[in-house]
Length: 202
Image 1 (cartoon, rainbow, N blue to C red):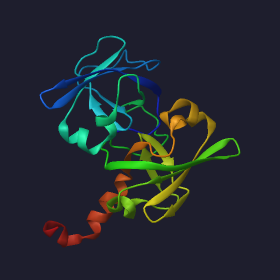
Image 2 (image 1 turned 180 degrees about the vertical axis):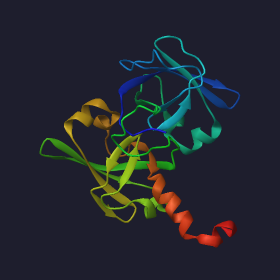
Image 3 (image 1 turned 90 degrees about the vertical axis):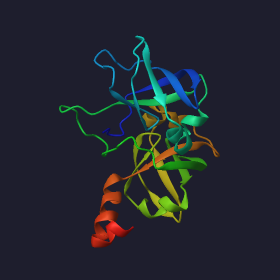
Image 4 (image 1 turned 30 degrees about the horizontal axis):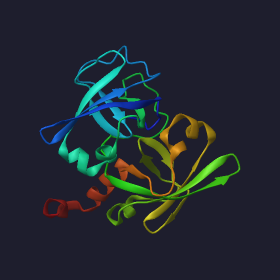
């Protein structure tokens, strides 16, 4: 589990095709990975990846075809900046919301405009995710825990403060950019619970 509070920006350092899936090397920049061990999870733009090698200045992770098809990982190129967050530990502070690192689908940036010192973005999600997007609810965009300011159909708006613009990939967003979307896991569980006995049939 993660909080959606990005710890550092990293960089895609290498991409290696391996039998239909991909092995990535991620340079972790300022992120302290001295306590990261093989098998630990790190969220990369909201995608939970497992460290299979630790070369010292970053980590190596395998990305399955399933993940490549459902996330923006299949679009990443060497040199691309990425949001990084280490998995929660028992003594971690929960500053955002509970984020699983299991991306639901790919969304798209529709527009961007200034709002005082902040930037306001409009994003579009696939129709199947629209029911999980609620005014003042939570959503993870490229692994960043955000509050939804406005909802219209399958589109929603977020307001990003200068700190987040500087410390995450959101600062580089322009219309047309594809992003990873993870809806609030509580909403998913609630939907399932409301089905009651019918859950076994759906």
